[in-house]
Image (cartoon, rainbow, N blue to C red):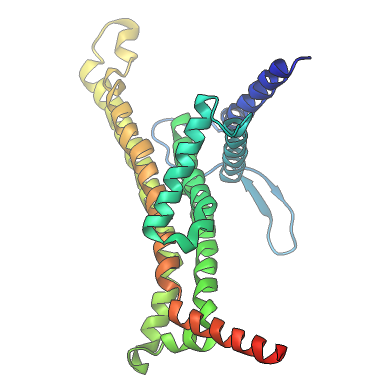
Length: 299
């Protein structure tokens, strides 16, 4: 088999790996969703439970969709970089290089050149968050509408923020809670804990509210259509004409614009908290002391 055919087969396989995880989620939801009449706003479906010592571990629609998002993004990255060359020879390589360049510029403009290694992490946050929100376009329960998922991201970011704050030493970190005066210590501690809480609730609340509002408006338009146009003869009276067009416009905002905006805001807050929390002066003093100790030991 020629190299061109092998490359084409790999491309087809990768494209399938991008699409099939979401197709699986959609089929699974259709087969497991119980029938209901009228408006229904519920949480994620629970597919099955695994017995555990303290409480059963629930495998929900959110976990399955999150895994599908990860597999899809991973496959997309492989597809965009398959056959990459020193000199770009395909449009997808140009797109991939454009994305990398924009993320690198974003890191440089908001954090500085010393944080260049943060580019993959920030890109991953934006990609997973955006894809998770966009999954609602396929009729799936978006993982960003589940507090457990978003809180997990916020806790991970909080650990990274704390790690960089501790690079200046434990004493300066603890001392910061008692500034400008010791009486402010409780408020500073609360402010520190509030960082992951605010990040998670902001993202979760905005995405979930969009899902709820879109569902309510969609149901209201169906009832209004029946009330105004229900007199039409035959099957025409059963068609919800007012649902045509308006929900699609709302979806552009709630599912696409708002989802992309929340992903961008979450990434921006991550960069802001890490860059501003890093005690550069204390870190430089600590590094200078280590160099002096190393030189004295060598002598």
